[in-house]
Length: 201
Image (tube, rainbow, N blue to C red):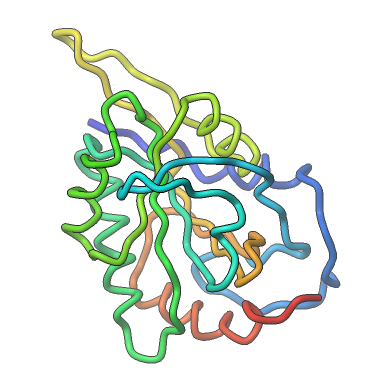
């Protein structure tokens, strides 16, 4: 069984990250997450999407996004999260937002495997894989914890932080949501956040 590391890890590790502007009073009141007093940078990275194309921090710009980490062999947390996000992005009045799924199991999650996986939830979803050290560095910058756990018979699973990050159109992390995710509350939060996701301060 895939266990989800508590969201407290992400909340703790987001604190000391470099901050880049915005007054502490700015931002909407969220019911299912935390709007950060100052937006955060994800830093530089180069990964590969499900089509085999390079995906860097520059690709985060242009449209708001929800970024989450997981893996295709996860039996519960990841599929529930992606199914919920699929419902959220289709909800009435929710602004256009990309969903980006970053694997924490690049050994098994090749681009083609990820493509088949995310398309089962929504063909528009983006999935990323790449060198383990690059994924580890990106996850660490965002406060995402994960570790490989051996299973009987030589197989393994991965315990990981169940968290989703809301990025604005400039690729900055503006808010953090932790599991369990509720589609209704998330959709309401995205509607509230929409005016703040296209303004650079």
